[in-house]
Image 1: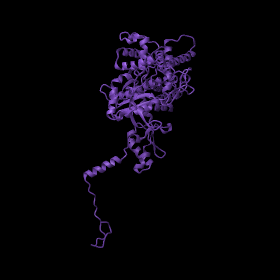
Image 2: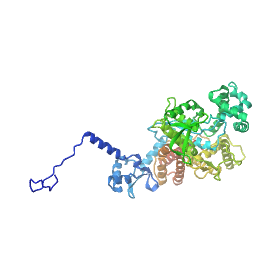
Image 3: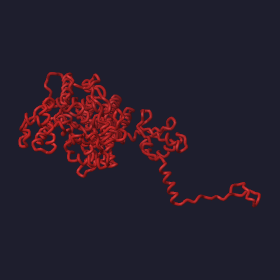
Image 4: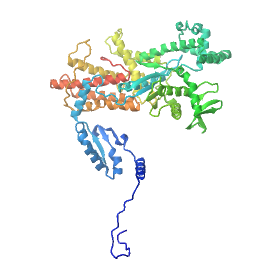
Length: 616
């Protein structure tokens, strides 16, 4: 009864009896489940620990207090104070006393002693520079390059090839099991045309016993000649279409001719891969998935995801429309019964993630131009709807922009044709050779084999670095002048930075001309100047940078970090003499900083697919 009530039994107030509601266990569980469902969990992202945006803020920032304070009914600064109280015993050996800035931001600064220890550990581990292996090892497929049979590789293939290779290198260095796959265009209607052209021009190519001995010569010229006949000769066109049917049915002559074309093309693009230092790229063309295509369509039809559409078979996905607002079809079977790119890509997803004889991949990356973004969005969505991919597998498109000429237009020859990748690489090496010759005492002298190798590394490295240093999603203007410059964030600049450190160490350790480069043993780091601290603060970020690229797949972060590292090394070397250090201990310490910096440059250039030089 409420206090002060009068029950008629007396005039004074009486205390009410406290009555707790009695809930069944089932009701209590239901309330608990509802509360848990409504709660917003505090996850990793809420921690908001990020690299500091400015040097004066320290090395890391934690902004978690700003979001937590409101839920806890505290001021952000009070919340930040409690976070620091909890952190202090955990981070005392690594960070200085945390600082609270502004309304509640927490700034964290690494201790000099920790920096010295960490860089020392990098020096003790020249192979990995103390970068830990991934704790959650995954199987990852990286699909990149993908040239077309009987067509030359062009600058678009350059981007896919070197971006894909770099990402594969990062993932492999992290400890994942990586499969590099080359999804070459080795199947389709154009092969009927090519087979028929070979029948009249290179009949030996259609004989299984002699097809491997046929020299097909210029494949591009052969393709153009076949296409010209196809466009003007109706009889040839009819035979070409019949040849496609024969090829797909496994006709022996047609397959022999097709294999001749594939072998000749493979030989040509292997030369490009060798020049670009691309290794372990397994060819698995569109033809590989032919046996699985009918099964893809049948399964989609069984699930009523694929339906008839104007004589073809298509999948219609929510959210995808044509410009007029009508549903946008994703064709999986054409009106003539043939299959589309989407069908092949769906078959590839099943093979790579589900099939026992496939990769059983946890993550699949597709490195192609941004023009294919919608295609992959739709293919991935269809694969998930059809349960062609396990729910815990990540399918990721890694798009890249166009390569443009210096005028901002399509990068092409003066006659308007697509620039051949081989010609582009040859020209870069030629210009690098001209530049290096100009700095020799006798510019007309024949270059030694070692000098020729330096020229090759500079030229090829310049092309690769110029591409990789850009945000991959941006279009970039191709310029031999900029990419071969010794100034700015370029391959020649980074190669010079590495060669310069080699020269410093050789001089300090008494190397003679022609001696094999040997690096000194790691020594205790002694901090004597702020430039040493700034260099070390950057060096110890190496694992963070690699983790970032592994997660978000932007190789330009490696190039940005390399450039920052080389600039900080220059400031260190200007302030801290190595050969003329005040004490032997200080000289050994600075040599260790030189060694770790050189090791960092070499490691990341290797991951970028660029070979360093000891002398430039």
